[in-house]
Image (cartoon, rainbow, N blue to C red):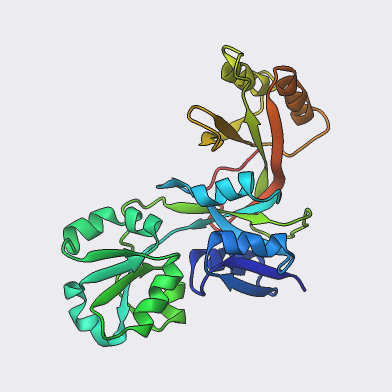
Length: 290
């Protein structure tokens, strides 16, 4: 039996992702994303599941930066989970929930519910937590506070909280992409499978005009579709960036090695962060990688 580490505590969206892919495996929650990734690096767990990108708020930078700078852990899979945020309060405070003075949640969850908070609870103070599950746990343990948590239905069940307002997120098509990290490629069998993807990172030569255009052309003429491209600072000085690209294609013997060789010929540094299967809890609404 494998051991799966995830961003905890119990009741997070990450746990929902883990339960969907690994319903029979041993799971271990960690309080932070770096702690979870460290655990798979030092072999305390076999696989780490952490959030990488949200459809509304964009990339989870701590995850991406840790993959790039701290560990050489390959991405071995991803799963996309629909995000539905609920307003939770301690059961003894549910009749007076509209007078809550503080709202606890993860920064991304707070941002996803901006309109609701501004219109319904404009005077409530915001307190950021490491996860939505941690927020729900805190509200459960502090019934004396006039407090609420933004979290999911699983957290309401786990921590015995009342859902006083449902689906308070600003946008209906809200999803989060979670990645699976492991020291070695893992094989997963799941009916949630929707396709394959390869994630690559590259740096540009400093003295090559039009280098980014040349990089993108290497994918274009091979008809490799890119679902995402973004830059992250190299942390060596202003103007120095890594570029991270998601290619909707599995690592093969011809196309992606050809791209790698062409980029290296241009003087680019190239690193494949992972080539992996993709899964989704919302298959009918998610684009299928080719």
